[in-house]
Length: 390
Image (tube, rainbow, N blue to C red; front, side, top):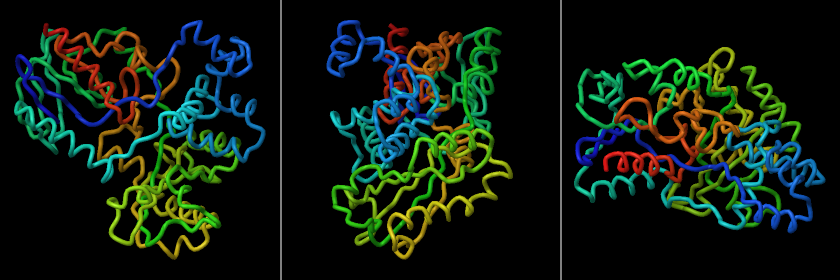
């Protein structure tokens, strides 16, 4: 939780890095026509591709599962299934990386947080408190008044920015009931049961892929062999089952940033993009049942990998919920569907970061435009607050 003074006291609940994975763009007609000419398709076909699923898009443009499977793993990173309308945007987004590149904070994600804290401290007008979970947002008479912590401490304030799940913030923590229309819209916002489950692996060398070159360790390594495997993974996860076979991909960030591992060591980040948020029997019972197949999958692609493993840590959706208050471990809080992107996120009535409560603003992955690590929702929420103050 971060607190800063801006013409009065402002409390930011659930502060963290959030931002943009994919925004919903409406191209101007001229640009759309130009793009259509470059691709040698009509504007109608291009619109169909942009608004369709990535299952359809990849089947039309790529001839083999040798390419469709890995690209589907990249697209599924957004927690969007192959048959989701509008999901094609997330397959196309991967192509943008070839133009714009990707960025990694030297030292890992914590280094980004540390840098933001240094920048915040440089202003001399803010206080950051850790392990201070909020129990209640007090807003009598439709105006923010205070934040009540689980410890019982009460922090008076006339402005609050919440970066946590908007459903929790407005439907569970807010002591002032929302109007029926606003509350019903928000309660209906879709959050599927498909999220990610992770295994962090410490090794004494990079995965020994046969004939691998150093450049091949700088990107995402996919173990998804077909679109059908990914499609079945989402179907099984939605039903509360661990997918079989298990879709999986890996990052080896120590290949480009040695500071994330001890000297002579490496880190391998394994992720299943279609894990069930709630699994039958509970995730505590499935922890090792999930980890061992992940290690086995890498072993089949990189013989000798298991012998290089020095240790591993499993981070299940339940762990994410406990650690970060993510509902069922959903890092985006809400699905990235076409009707829940940009100004429609989390709902049309709440898409401008304002709420019906004066002084209460929404930010975070569940708000306009979407989640990620670019910080866009945080910037937009702060700008909205400042405009209202003026």
